[in-house]
Image (cartoon, rainbow, N blue to C red; front, top):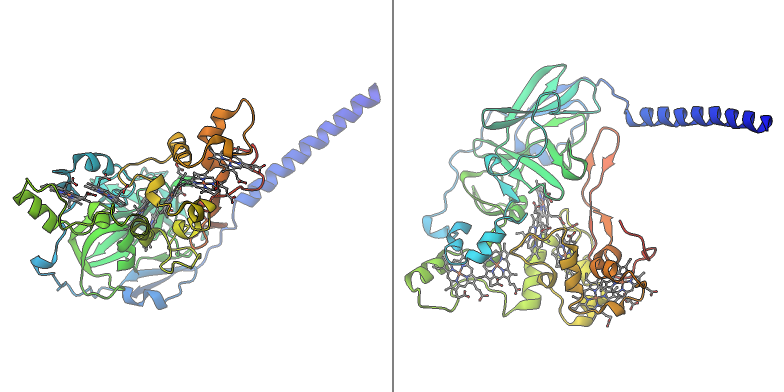
Length: 415
Ligand code: HEC
Ligand code: HEC
Ligand code: HEC
Ligand code: HEC
Ligand code: HEC
Ligand code: HEC
Ligand code: HEC
């Protein structure tokens, strides 16, 4: 009896020490080695950004030679967008719900969207792996700023003028105007971790303020803008002429002529001068969505820009191959925000499948199975082409994989 008790006590002591060791190890593991790397301030033209490879300690600021302020203006006749509010005049139903989608809010002015992350002193900083170097996110009146601080001395401050990303899923990234030059700021907000992070592609321990936001970036996040030239690498534009968000005309094409026509002739009930998808369904809709959600090469499964190539993955599914034309809008209403609505999502699977097709269904758990198809047949996987460099590791976001199939190890597990 006594021996047993002693053993128990000794065992307990060992266990306590063991737990402490594990805890200490955790503490050491989580606290990255913070070096003090000397800084080097460089001024550079943003055009040089793509040849530049910054290393720890580099503070890269825009040169004082500003962009050519003579930004080309399209002749009025070439600007054929109206903005979404004009569409709402006659299509109230779509307008009312579409306004709340991540598409509509995927780019905006800072005072038109909820700014994520904290700007409150004490909670508003991002410490880099370099002990002396940090970033502060600050407000002054209605303006938001990002600044880089070296040994408590503010070296540079840029205002947040454009928000990219709704932040509802992955996060927000920020743009700043240097006269007519649109540049990306070094710090982004990452929603899954509720944290400030280095923007994708930015090296931890550097402070680069010269990264151009090229047209390619806007093609997927902005409805319409005016660039200085037609060069896709150009980042000089007019800040006052931008229709933010992926709105009606991103999908239906510029609507000026359509609006003019139907305002002038309210008796015409046939859609004129606008892209409608009803007639060209399968190929038309999927091509539209994959312009931003897939890679350009239909055969290429490699990921597009930070998306998991939904179309290319979907096309591998038996659902796609055997149904004769499954489209993105069979499961997603382009005018509504439906994230997290599992029952609705599952009902769409059941427009083709019956519950009894699912050979895993267990007696008494019908409701659970009926409502959770995607949870077992579509897995979340890491995106292959995007990561954030953090002080102690790389953060890689994940997204749902559209290759629908029986996944190994998914019998009853639920995430
Ligand atoms: C003055 C009224 C009016 C305005 C403003 C208007 N539309 Fe229309 N639209 C119509 C009418 C009328 C039709 C044909 C009837 C129908 O399909 O509803 C139509 C049809 C459409 C269709 C085709 C629907 C289909 O599949 O048949 C689309 C898409 C569309 N409009 C998009 C837009 C967009 C985008 C805007 C804003 C740029 C816009 N409309 C602004 C009146 C208007
Ligand atoms: C012009 C580019 C573009 C086109 C075209 C486009 N999308 Fe998107 N989509 C985006 C961007 C950017 C986001 C990220 C929005 C954000 O900031 O959260 C997104 C997000 C989404 C989401 C996730 C948000 C949510 O509601 O959960 C879905 C689903 C989606 N798109 C479906 C579609 C479908 C279906 C189509 C075709 C009808 C389509 N998209 C066409 C750019 C586009
Ligand atoms: C080829 C189209 C494309 C390009 C180019 C692109 N994006 Fe995106 N972006 C998307 C799509 C699609 C999503 C939604 C990803 C998803 O949920 O699958 C997205 C999501 C995002 C998000 C997260 C929004 C959220 O909360 O879900 C941010 C932030 C973002 N993009 C910023 C940028 C920036 C900054 C650039 C340019 C440097 C850029 N993107 C270029 C298509 C694009
Ligand atoms: C992400 C792309 C996308 C955006 C943004 C978008 N639509 Fe659509 N819209 C579509 C697609 C795709 C269809 C065809 C849907 C189908 O066949 O089920 C459609 C269909 C329509 C129709 C036909 C009726 C219907 O609801 O199916 C109208 C009208 C319309 N859209 C108007 C608008 C208006 C107005 C806006 C802005 C408030 C808008 N759309 C925004 C992709 C989009
Ligand atoms: C447009 C109709 C359609 C929709 C919508 C659809 N499927 Fe399918 N699915 C099919 C067809 C057709 C097959 C081929 C097998 C068959 O004939 O039953 C299939 C096959 C499958 C298989 C077997 C795959 C394999 O590799 O053998 C699974 C699992 C499945 N679907 C799950 C789903 C889930 C989950 C959803 C919703 C997220 C869904 N399906 C939506 C038509 C569809
Ligand atoms: C808890 C996880 C889970 C849920 C929820 C679930 N399934 Fe399944 N499903 C499975 C597994 C595991 C299999 C493989 C069973 C086997 O072959 O023994 C399967 C098989 C299938 C198949 C047949 C694949 C084949 O081999 O032909 C289809 C179709 C299917 N499921 C559709 C659905 C649909 C539709 C729903 C929602 C109504 C759903 N499943 C919900 C786990 C699930
Ligand atoms: C068979 C049904 C189905 C089809 C078809 C489908 N999706 Fe999805 N998609 C889903 C489900 C289910 C989710 C998860 C929704 C949620 O989490 O609430 C999803 C999520 C998404 C997301 C959000 C990304 C994320 O990681 O959560 C995007 C973007 C998206 N789909 C785009 C597309 C595009 C583009 C197409 C066409 C190529 C498409 N989807 C076709 C069922 C489908």
